[in-house]
Length: 559
Image (cartoon, rainbow, N blue to C red; front, side, top):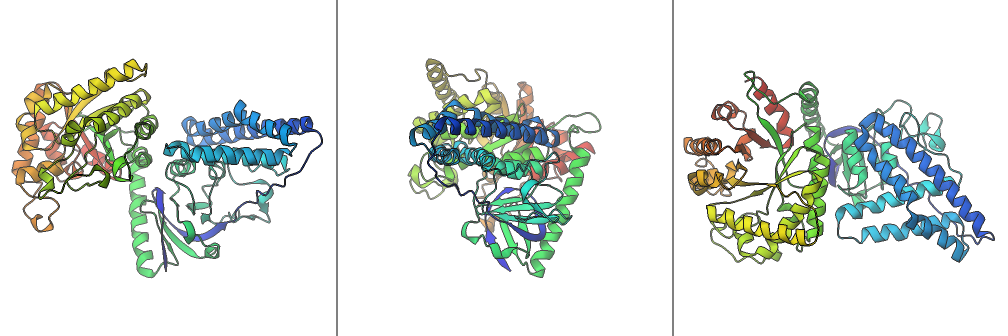
């Protein structure tokens, strides 16, 4: 067995035979031409043909996956019709008297390099898009047939004797596709009946190819790099799109375990088909909002796939933890905007950075603490280093016009902390107004209830904010005086303790006395043995891992 670790970008387990997708030959010869005008006309005709092909592909994708997933190919058409793009190609033809194919390839490389150099991960992913549309134009110029078919399967020149020469079977057999990379248009044209999953050497979780794989329900892994081996063709493999693990020629134990997990996933899918779109409501009519918790923008696919009604906790500190330097306002704005747009009208509650304690970042230069759980962390950092906090708040406010964003403050122990945070938020709002930058003036503000102090002060805090969300992990730790990072204390750190449950009850009652809603975003929210208790206490919202949404909805609907 050979184990490869990549980046999981689309959850799910696939077991099957590998087919290696050979890299297409995009070699372009530079030729000197005599008639630049005729060559420009040739480019325009090829571009128009490529636009027509993208329109067909867009319609195919819209019919199968919905209009919102087809918008990518509208964007691709706009790229081709962009005056700057066409002007660069035609300018190169006129100035250097080169053939159209060479001009398109040169401009594609120039634009792709420009996107790749940007700070925004989303804009970096657009490098693959400009290369994809340019290859389509080059294919037309070189006389290659279009691979876009009415049924969305791979067709055209690649098909020969019932199989696709580049490795995708058309004879009824299904495979796991291994490739150096896949363009968005190539991914959209895969026949889902014949493809079990995707593994690529290149790519990222933010790429349109990864987004399409998630939309299509295909387990997918990117970034295996040099582990990509064409000789894997024909071998049996198992891929885990959640963890990013690839097992080539799996041993019996690994295969058995993956088959068990695959069966569980299929059972979960059956639950999805049964409960998708159904309200999270008890038999007596008590309504509960069932949200999901995430750590990064790529997690949104799992939120939507599991039919969560919103995001109850976006742990924004992961934008800091996964970098070696401060995330800029533009970088954060891009991440928040992406999540808000993908969620549409559904609520997105973003917790401000919760750095400190067990989440340490070198560039914060935090002093060593003997007891960091009780130390300099979360809102305490934000209030004493407002220049860091304001960058995040500005990014959140700017992103608020793209969806239904709310801001949540962690580790609150006093009313003054909330007021100080709101003052800095007002400063950020004032700055944006002065810059004529739009944002949601009535953006909601909530606090996490995760300390005994915040429970005791819940009535006063409720007068300051729009909602509460109980962080049961820290609330258990602080209520029972048990460090949750110490394994030897596990028997004493009982989250079912009557003391913890009474804290939750007091918080819910205080929220309702003041007309605000109260949710739970800690691990206890997914504890099915406590669901009935939470319903009896009158909880308004539960935020859990995406895969816990449907089992929890099932329990609530049967209450």
